Image (cartoon, rainbow, N blue to C red; front, side, top):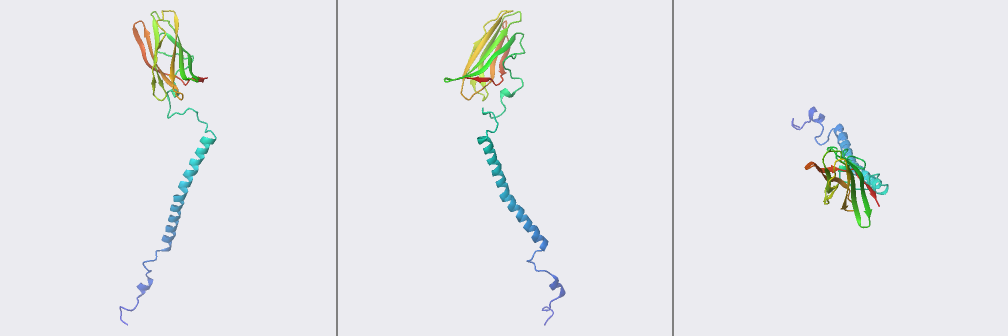
Length: 197
């Protein structure tokens, strides 16, 4: 036997290259278990939550408003005006909202806005309504006016716009005139009105 054929002590002490240490094998098994748990557990949890939301919304009502809205609407603003509110704080005359309602009938829906104007100025005033902006952004044309109101007198304007069945008003375009001068022209946000009929 030659020196090359005789085993040495160092050859016997070296483990085979193929066998990993036992701690590495345990860590590898634990990693595989966690990956399998995540791979099956996450989709199950997502599906369970989705199913729960469907049950809550469809069968139990979900507690949401029946009117669908994509986002916060104009009627959610704190400066929106409604019945008994001053329509235009910026003007010297007093414009009080007396009616703000959606009237439902077999023929469709109509938004009605009534404003009582008291002229406390020393010049004639006039209040005109023009377009109605719906909560979805669509504009509906219409024109109404108090006509000229002399100093110390009062007048009223009642405006009505035909609107689609699912629509709600968001803002009314108003023009206020004092003497020969336009003192306000623009849209005024309105609160969500009551639906009658």
